[in-house]
Length: 466
Image 1 (cartoon, rainbow, N blue to C red):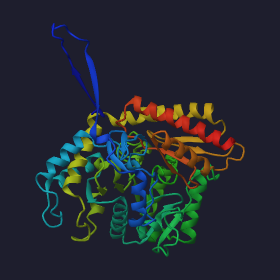
Image 2: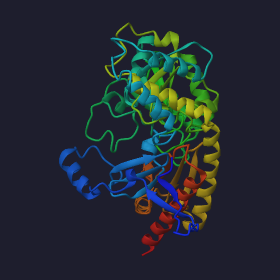
Image 3: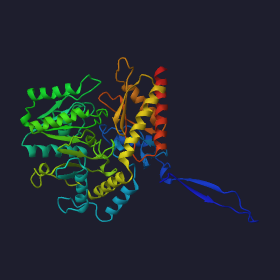
Image 4: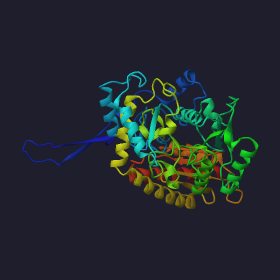
């Protein structure tokens, strides 16, 4: 749907002589200023909302469509953030909105634990089909990614009779206390809120920056088995196949394959946290599919429901049935409107070829970032990485030291915002920009966003030089 509406009118004179055809372009009322200002809303927010709920941009949304967003002052932005990876099918995808509205006309909530409903079952069946592996599967639906991870841990512990959980440096699994225990980054998530739950252990993540090879990481894991985490007491190893908050770093396929073998050797379950990397972001339904590894449990959320709050755990049926009746669930878990939206979002991904689109978009992004780095900021784009359209650019002060440059990253993001492009950082040092542009974005919109990004980089370089 266009943000403008064009109407053609033909005028005539008294002699019935045809006048030149004129085109009047009327602005979409939804994108126009509504009388509020961003500054006023920032002040109201500061008075009403805890400072711990941080917002990356000091603008307030009024309208959005596909990969574009307008604020309350009528300013237009190209959205390379997508609600933190939630909008692979774009803002307000027509199919998603239609399905949600149709469901709202029937009922919006009964609680699946009281009066169940078809959309939950239909979505579970679909997810069981999409998930990798030949074993029979079942799906639990909940509301948030952190809730999905917590339930995956519960299921793993119930199924194995063990308590230990191993996560990795740089991994992000949520902000509840249990998931914070698994999250491998202190600031801002874990600062000042410990202690965290016991029996959660940390293994090293393979990192080129830190000189940690796959073999080094595996050695660290094996040393963990010798020093702190008795393998016979470990229920699960959880890993993001592509780090999200940790820097959009793909896990080497060799690492995932070795983890699968180690888990099989010790009777440990392998959990793939696909909350950010799933539903086409990397060019496959789930990013772990690139490695050929089949996990025991998969956590999902974000882009599954096209903007509606929904999450879940998909796993082998025998494991998913480990909990007794009543042990899983939640009042709002698997909300029927969100389930209907998810079914439509999945259908849109299939019908519009968004998996292939992700792969092509990723190739474009990487190539263009390389060109931009060479032209606008030589020796500052230290790494351009990712799978499919889950791509990040890491900034450094110079190639010789490779020192992370979070300040430069902040300036690039700030200059991009001034020019109408929404960006978000990531990484252990806050020095990477990640791209989460909707896969439905047109080539023209993506190119417009990349042109703004190059302007922002050049402006950040000039600002630094002066």
